[in-house]
Image (cartoon, rainbow, N blue to C red):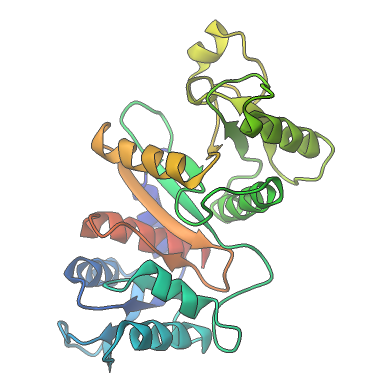
Length: 289
């Protein structure tokens, strides 16, 4: 993909979805849902919370009194197959995810939940995926493998046949004092042996030589991924969070994001994100849900 606008166009051809706004007191989230309806991405909207701020045949309001009740009712609507997408509104992420992980009526599957962001910045000729800047604080080697599999699965649904995956570290060489570089080299070897399917993995790579071919040449970093990465795998939640937000606030870019690995896509974006950003995330969810 060259632009996040492609998500909206693709979502329009994916069949209209039903969406739940968990905490409809969030005006920007409701606005995003309305925009998705007007773009014919969404057919029905469930507004769950205390504030009925949209009335229409396409809307069903579910009144709740507490955050916990809002999260529970929202998740149950999705798990009962009345809706396809869960959108976080004015409810704490921890409260919503506790409901998502409920063993009786939640959305948990057998795999790990992780976050995937898609960013568009003026300096790149393509959108770039980033994982995981929103769920796993400091992933283990095994969790990094699961995180990559989640992101690659999402990218396959978007038409990427064999995504180029860069495991990002501060340096592009293995350093015993930087365990992240050791993990990167192990995962790269696992991919070479076929333990990670339908993707090309390399690491450790620096951010510069993962994204920019000239930087890779200058540093003599070679390989199919160098300078051409589609997916950046970061070492911890801090670096992923900083990287995604810097695309917005330093580079004037755009971002969409999802929690994947559950039975339905979960749109969890920053409360500071505007309706357009949330619309892009809804479109992403509609494409893969």
